[in-house]
Picture (cartoon, rainbow, N blue to C red):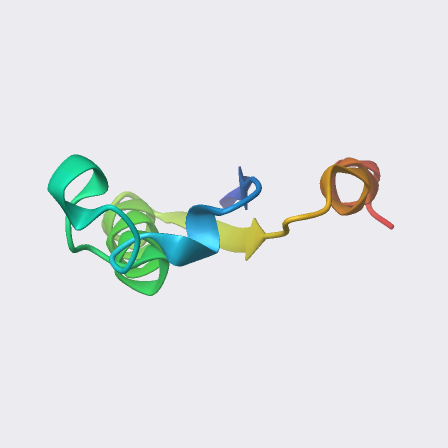
Length: 64
């Protein structure tokens, strides 16, 4: 099975609640669900992670 890691960077945890006129009302949890559902329909597995710390995202890519 194909697998993918989706990394969301700083402040994306605020989607759906901050500047909704600009970024919309869809939350990050909803975006993650849409991405996972899309992947599942195509036989893939997706893990979504978000961090406001860029160093944590680097560690996630490294598998740490």
